Amino acid sequence: DAGVIQSPRHEVTEMGQEVTLRCKPISGHDYLFWYRQTMMRGLELLIYFNNNVPIDDSGMPEDRFSAKMPNASFSTLKIQPSEPRDSAVYFCASSPISTDLDTQYFGPGTRLTVL
Amino acid sequence: AQSVTQPDIHITVSEGASLELRCNYSYGATPYLFWYVQSPGQGLQLLLKYFSGDTLVQGIKGFEAEFKRSQSSFNLRKPSVHWSDAAEYFCAVGIQGAQKLVFGQGTRLTINP
Image (tube, rainbow over all chains, first blue to last red; front, side, top):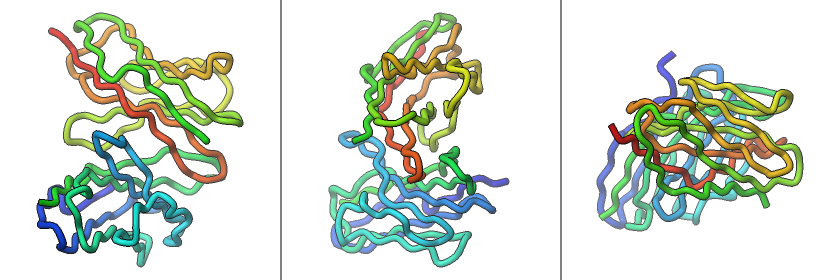
């Protein structure tokens, strides 16, 4: 399996622009997670989906952030408008269905720089 | 609320020396505990996990961790480190029924030749 795929790997944009990050989870995994990693705040869970349905978005920082999962093989995280404080590495992870907590498999991340 | 503390931000050890990375958690129920490793420019990879049973857990790359409920700790150990072990290490606690992980701030490991 190719693992979790994220694109782009690097994104540089200017303040006010819309940014879309993409994720393809591992086939057969029913959970998908979006994390943000910064030096100041470490690794934070933004939102997670189960069977394409958002379950917990309490980590989404504000209305400028939105996430969708239109099907089992694709998810997007959108920031509109972007701000310099959104600069971070954004990770997508997926996990197989389980009756209990299971291993999360992480993608390589997207490094976002907002100028 | 659930939390994880990794007291050491940065540790340097010599190649071939033993290693222990500390992790303390706060969680009201039986914890699910994880150690992940992140190499530069990469995503996180699972080293090992504890759900129940034997409190000494073996993982990949020669790592092990011991769950000590009385100390709320889940320290990671390796008897002899290799230069390729240089990376950032994250401890995490799983929230039962919610499929969520709470991560510590991470410990950056540097290996001296």
